[in-house]
Length: 171
Image (tube, rainbow, N blue to C red; front, side, top):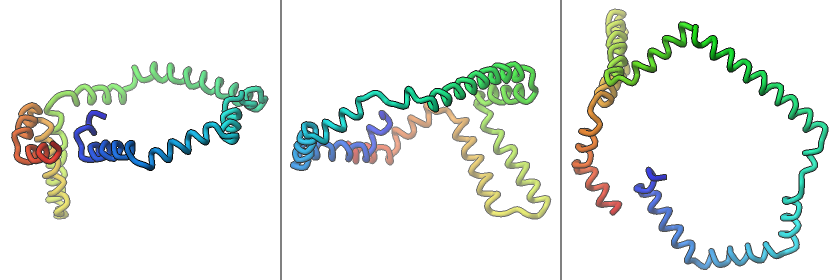
């Protein structure tokens, strides 16, 4: 919710909420709610909602619960077996290595490297298209943004004219 606090939509929502609380419509709605709460229909609905369900004593519901308990135990056994298989699997070891490498800053450069190989292959096949070049440029831009220092980018954005105008509009 903290992300939304600075947005225009959240500020508009707060203003509308204040206007609604002070409006004639909110007084009418609260009067209707108060009258409904003390009416015969409101008391009947409240009494039927608070009673114990008859499905708790049903044979069908008990059978379904037993089936789900069996399925749950089977899933737990399969999960423990899966954990043992995962430790000896080459595929999971490779995925774990990729996850560890993804924490490195230069991992973002993998996509432009593969993109360059794709572009070279398309040139050799004489099938290079504009979309290939655009996607390669986007992957290079994304890699540069991911490898850049986030504090420097944050400082650059805070000192930019667009950000200052944004603060002026919201403030």
